Image (cartoon, rainbow, N blue to C red; front, side):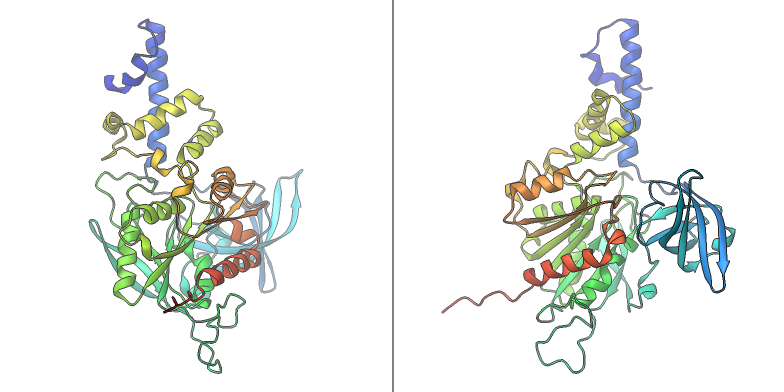
Length: 420
């Protein structure tokens, strides 16, 4: 361990050999924790075991090892074969706690051979691309720092031919607004370790609302150019790529945008609304299981990993202190306090809808509820239950879409024309 890794503990513990060993061990653990948070992972662990695939005529069912994910009702993606296979899994047919197995319906296999899969990973990403949702889409390139970032551009659904001028562009969904909003674009911002596929859960809804949608990639996500330091900024740097997406939308006919963000994508959206030169053109934000306060999330993960509180705080210090970047590899410290929106609640002036499960195991819902309580004028909070992290839609898509549609219907309603 480099000698400068002990700098923060040197003044806290004595000069004895035992204290020095404790400090070095704590420093190493804190550094490991900090690096895990800010370093992208290129290969996802396939931690869900497949026990058998059953064919019944033209239908398929899969027997899985019971896990906290696989035993929750809803519709999910199952990714296998190193990411080359993608299946959509539906309802639970049976669950045997004694045997620790669960039988689920296989609704679709988009790629790969599920019958040969032995392991994979659970995902909230149900569909692999817009075509799987029967949505037209175009691959576009957005200029960002370091090059071009690919995005899917999904156009708004056409208004029904029989619709009178000014009628809903809802394309047969309950999500239609009073008038088409084609000059308002939706920008979908995925979470940490995810991809633009995450936004597909909202793409059909946005299309039905008359919105063009950009499902973007951003630095370090495996599609967009990596940042020079190859580290996540937890929202403090990634927001610039969202700003680039807004610029693209404005150049192609948008007058305003709605930001959708999942998990860390929520933190990125909040930073965009705070720092972007286009902040006044952000009509609204829809945030799913967002990171509202990184300090709270990092403390939660330290506890989950049985890391002592003081060591977890030291890891936070490494990320946020200028000296820490020598150890973490960050080009600049991450200002965690600036991303504490519970403390900054009154500063949020963009209408925001937050959907967050009280059973979220990864990002606790408390800060989301607290932000809404402190700024009820701007923030609406809708609680879900049973859903795990960013899987509110997966557990109850009808409720998720109904809530978002009703709220956006209000936000996108024509503004009153000033008198005189």
